[in-house]
Image (cartoon, rainbow, N blue to C red; front, side, top):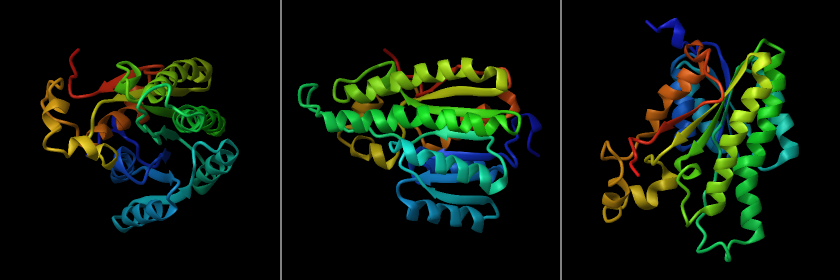
Length: 254
């Protein structure tokens, strides 16, 4: 029997970047626990496939096309999510991109703009829009998926590191703005997880020892290992938690 304190049953939760990786794991995990998930990403076919899988298992889900870097299109995504079941209880700003660049000098303006748009601009706008929708039904919870690179910047992805550091600051600022409306805003700082996006090094036998060397648990994370934190932050268990950044990295040293 589910502990009511950690219940997400009947919550309507919008997850960006929800068709794969950590987003997919959270959509599946939340749906298994009774949440109604709105799966959003640029790849609508993949979102629809996952939504069908969830519905086939008895859950509730629907797919929404969403490019989080397209400011003007985000109004429609939030309106669709809130309109589907008459409310919006949760938003997980999960979509992100972390292309590598040889150096700062070789980082183009186009690359810079794309990384900032997806990792910071989009979450900023979605947070504002979702908060307005949540106010109509008495509050909610917003979760920003950040990265260990935000606090331990990496030289091969400096703009990504900067964007995620900005997301951390946004989390704390938005928590202050929306506290009076009973909307909590928190972040999860993620370490290395075994996702397709990280496959180039986490599934490379030659590179893996160096990847796990600073990790206390001696391994990379499974995508489903983020679900517990998401459930906590969406549920009443975190009713006094806002403006916080929870680190899930297996115990990275240094």
